[in-house]
Length: 115
Image (cartoon, rainbow, N blue to C red; front, side, top):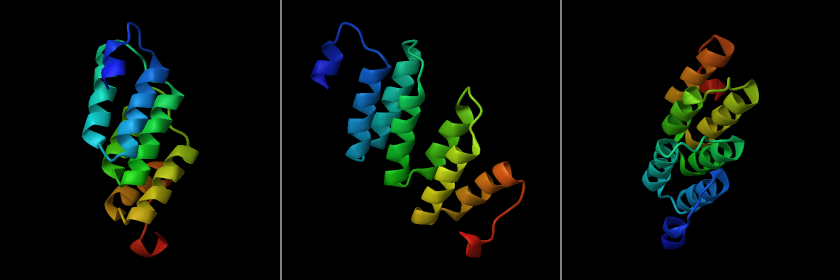
């Protein structure tokens, strides 16, 4: 973190690298904190940034956070993105999140059997 803090200029690549490191080690609070700090400093998240965070969320079981992040994106999420979240919900048994996502994507609720 010291090297990152000392950088005279940071961009989405350096921010994403730091978030990936925190996410890989299960430090999700720090990862989301960096995401907020990045936005506060006027650096816009790009596809790599969202992929980094969503990957960490899916590996760490943070489905509620991933759902909130997707909903807050300025671009319209596609079915592939929602499908990836549904797949992660299945792995981690996050039925409530999966039901909300299915309602958004498919306009219907899923039964626990279909998960």
